[in-house]
Amino acid sequence: MIRKSASVLLWMGMTTVCIRAGADDATTSKLDSLFRPLANDRSPGLAVLVQKDGRTLFRNEYGVRELRTLTRIDAKTNFRLASCTKQFTAMAIMLLVHDGKLRYEEELGDLFPDFPADGRTITIRHLLTHTSGLPDYEALMEMAEKASGPAWTAAHQIRDDEVLDLLKHQTRGNFAPGSSWSYSNSGYVLLGLVVAKVSGKPFDRFLRDRIFEPLQMTSTLAYVSGKNSPPRRAYGHTKEGGKFVESDQSPTSATLGDGGVYSNLADLAKWDRALRNGTLLSQEEMKAGLYAARLSDGLEPHWPTQAGDDNLNPGKPVSYGFGWFLDAYKGRARMWHSGSTQGFRTVIERFTNENLTIIILCNRTDLDPSVLALRVADIVSAQE
Image 1 (cartoon, rainbow, N blue to C red):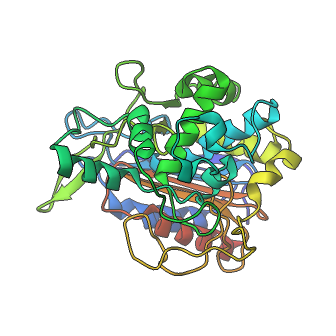
Image 2 (cartoon, rainbow, N blue to C red):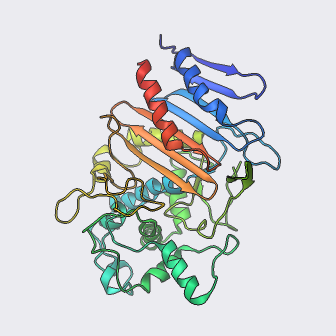
Image 3 (cartoon, rainbow, N blue to C red):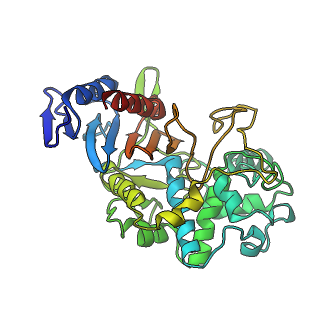
């Protein structure tokens, strides 16, 4: 039986609060049993939200924000979203198109006149859909440091303008724009710079003014060290020799458009509601970003054949819109994205025909929230 009234279960020992509104006891128990063994009150952990038709089916937090004070994770704990940031970057671009200040077919040569000739015909659409052919900026960092010595560390991180400078010094891309597909953090760093250039506002401020404040996502921000700071911040961790070690920052942790947003369950529930209700853009305007990209020859794109950190399915077909993967799961339509960075793993899964959303945020790298989210989807589906 579906319970319409909310209830709160207080579990002894860990004092974890499990909130359910609309899930039956069996579903709640199965979901909690999936996550409870993964963390305790002395380990970094995760925050989980499951929403159906805008109502909370399940929300729970496990583990601590950081190991120094053992402060518990709660619904307002801010995690670095990593590549789940890309959906906000894409929305910022779509808002500028809505404003009439930008076109999806606008070329980099128009926006950055000194961009190398080989990349001047890259369009905003190419950047949004990972069909630009831009080289990976982390590979370019490695090449630069081999030639000139160490330049970036966790304390001296690469910034967006430095990424742009590295790209401007390349004479050739990985492939002609639109001719192939390769997941590109470089492209989304450039999109953040495009937002700043076209809007006349720093990227973090544009996100605040046009997305976060209108949606009352009061704790969400694009983190710029020395300028702002995530409230109730979770710190990232990795496991070394069987023990967790704080590993929160890397040389690439300061770039913005590809992975710089921090957020939490409470605010991401508002983001999910806005997407469902068309609060920022009408459903008609959103359609542009929810078509799977095709290559310039009309063919379906594929992941690169060579395995790599950002290559989830080497050689297999890929469906990607503007900041979202769009491939179905067991025949169930969805839009989703995962994130992986120093100390953090995240995922947002939206099963669009079912109005089901699953959000999992981890401040540790030994968990796979994408796998966990699909197990949640299976559990919820089996109980319906």
